[in-house]
Length: 306
Image 1 (tube, rainbow, N blue to C red):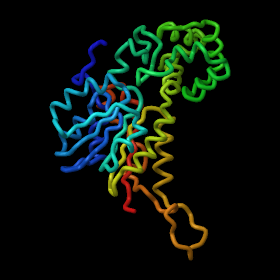
Image 2 (cartoon, one colour):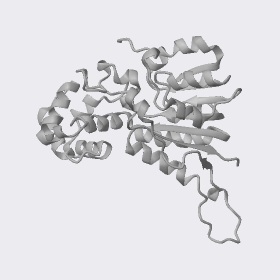
Image 3 (cartoon, rainbow, N blue to C red):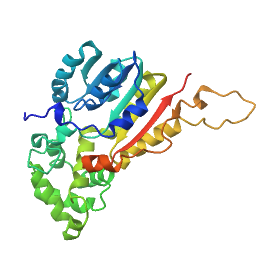
Image 4 (cartoon, helix red, strand yellow):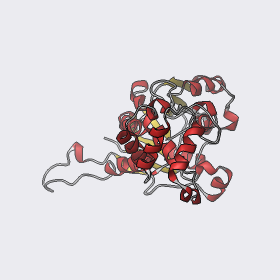
């Protein structure tokens, strides 16, 4: 495997994440999307605390051993889905999630997440299970178009699905990008993003069940957060951000009661205090330094006492 390393990793909205998480001495935190270790390093440097780093990518866990050595017993790494964080820890002072593809995954052509360089059509974060090639070469037209439309928010999904099926089998990222671009037609080239961007996003989300993982992870975080524990989530597209927004908003406002004379039930109690009333965005200086930060949105909440 080619050589990604921590020195190249640029964590998105790092200052805002630390401000929202507010790590303290003696605290215990979960970095549910360890990736290149950027947030974990910053948390451990900000306070004399402990971090549990979780990642389903075995390459990320292997690369993270250098940080384990550096910070000794303060850092523990676990290979697994972040939706299972409640299986790895029972109580924590904070959870941070940086959704989407890690920089080092995106920069490795052999992982198949990007079409900037040709590589196998893989996209699996865990390096196991169904690959993007498996899906595009076996799915029927209705399923393929539905995935591209739903997860890519792509209006030309049916046309793209038709082109993909006509060109099968497809094995490489450059090949798929060319097929999608041709299906979009010359008019698509006028837009700022590459014509294949939304289709690649859709396939990646589907192959890795990213939205299902996110929904389960948010529920798991609520289970393990201590009172005054903080949840901080950085998302990169509207589908993710909508899930996070609805999760926090629905649990930060008491549900209406049938009668003012009835006691407030547990189900009606707010569970979070919003730290961010609306999504925070990166500043201009950061987006100039790191264009990948442009679409980032940060939301955070603090768990209330029972």
